[in-house]
Length: 82
Image (cartoon, rainbow, N blue to C red; front, side):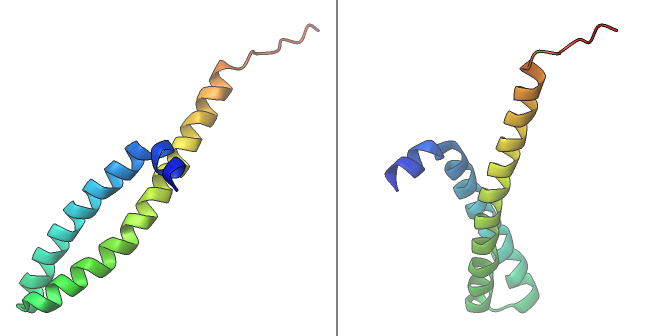
């Protein structure tokens, strides 16, 4: 687990900051809609928690896509003489 955390530290930090931001916004919106503090905190923890996991894996897919593009761009181009 420690190796996983070290290998993914930038993405995990970004995910954590996104999570805090998302909870704050969700709590404010839920409170504005319901007027109930307990309900707003409950709602604000549920959806952003699911989103944080989705965001982490979304970032990993984009990192892999960027590596693929970089690898293809640096590959030698074959020429065919006709």
